[in-house]
Every structure is written in C-alpha cells, then in structure tokens.
Image 1 (cartoon, one colour):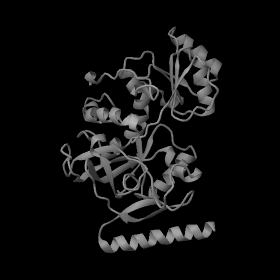
Image 2: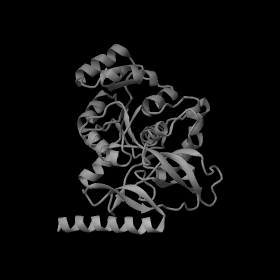
Image 3: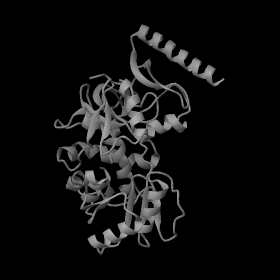
Image 4: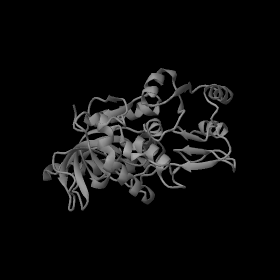
Length: 345
C-alpha cells in the first residue's frame, strides 16, 4: 500500500509537469512527494497574487532545520505533493489589487509560509505586501534571504505582548536576531554560549561575552559570576533541547524568564516565567507586530543596525536543496545559513 501511494504521487507529479509545460504557465519547484516521502524537482503552476499580495520571482531561498524535520517526521504538512521553504528573496513580478508600496522589478525579501503558493523552494511564490521589505542596494538576494525566519523568532520572543513574548520596548527611533536585538534594546551584559570558533563573529554582532557551549552548568554559573554581579533574568534558548532548557532554567533567578523556540520539555519552577516562541508569520498574535517590523526593515539594514547571517550558496539550484537538508540533519552546518538559488546559478 505504501509503494502504491508513492507510485500514485509520482504519477501525479509527472502529469502536473506535462499539463503546465503545455500551458506555458509552469515553474520548477522542489516537491515533497508524500508524507515522509522523497524530494523531487518537478513542475507546478505559477500562482497569481490576490489583494494585498505580490508575486515574487525568487532569486534566493535559505534552508532551515524545520524543512528536513517535516520530511523525516511527517509533521505540519497534510496535503501532497508539498512545497517547503520559508526564507525568500527575489524580484517583484506582479502586484495584486491594492498594493501601492511595491512595483514590478523591486528587490524584496520576506518570510513564506507552508502553503504551496507561498513557500520558497520554487521559482515563483506569493508574499503578503505588508510583511515584505525592499532589499537595500548594499545587500545581495542571498544575504537578504537569510534574515526572515531566524529574525522573526527572535523578534517575536522579545517584543510580542505576553504570553507570546517578553513585551520589551523596541527602540525603533534608534533606527541575529537575538544578540543584535538585545544590543539595540540596551541589554548588558549579553552573554551567549556557542562554539569557541564563532566567538569573534558573535562579539561583532553585540555579544559582550561568549562562553563555550560544552561547559557544564556548574562551570557556566562560575564563569557568569566572574563576568557580572547582575542576576540572569532572561535566557533565550535558541536550541531548546531538553538539556539546554534545563540549563537555562537553572541559570535564572526567581522572577526570570526562559524563552524557548520549541515546546517546554522540562518541569519548570513556579517562580520562573516561560515564553514559547512561535515565529509563524500568519499567527494572529504576530501579524501586527511583524507588519511594524517590515515597515522599518529596509532602514534598519541600510543603517547596519541589523546584519544578515553569514551564508554558503548551494550549487545546482533546487536540486542542491536536497543535499543541503541532509547536511543540516547530519549536523554538518555551523555558524552559517545554507542558501539555494531556485533559478540556478
């Protein structure tokens, strides 16, 4: 039965490719054939933007760990074949009704969603005009594509209203993400754990101290005491395994807050607050916050208040994403984002 299902899925992809190549409205896309199935490059229709939307000709898309987890564990997606990918940058090809802030040819970046017409592992996609921004002239498509998903998680966790975030004040008048945002919001010290080889880079973004992530809880506590007498009242856990959550929890003083990007996996003290970040564009509680962010994003990038991630470009266009996701799953990527060019080199 499983073989038959996979066979039918492959036939459906083939027929779709034939139909749309005949109609002249086809595009290439990386398709997940079925639940926990294979990735294949095939054809699907080019969508049309609705009111308040733009059609983007994608030039770059960044990969995220959730993409391989959807394939491996069969989570989130229920309709197949499916297009994944949620970090995108490209050129506006068409604007929908009511869109006045973009024109054909504008260079833009945006966060996609897990919807076949709005995901980014393809050559064209739809984006909401309210949550897209123009790319400054000093940034490439590839650099811009590394920003949306990681930045959204950090931004929502720090600035959304409770219980969805810490509800900190965002200093927009001053013109990674967590370290850069913490710096802009006046935090000091900003202590992060990471591989020691990334220490200089993280300090360039605003970290005051970088501690080796392999240190035990006791060693971390001792090192932090050497650096500051200020109690640790916020831990932002960007990994959020059970082990890192427990370490973060145990570093906090009563009244502190633990922010995690995955569901809570530990027994939390009643004296510690918890914020579970859901950096999903379409969640109602995120929409107003993210519209405000995107209206200011271009200026923040021009002023270098926000700096994109470092990245490595994958070869072979959409085909290269398959190997890139395997590298992410095998924990072979450190300190960079992997970026693909859906239209090839």
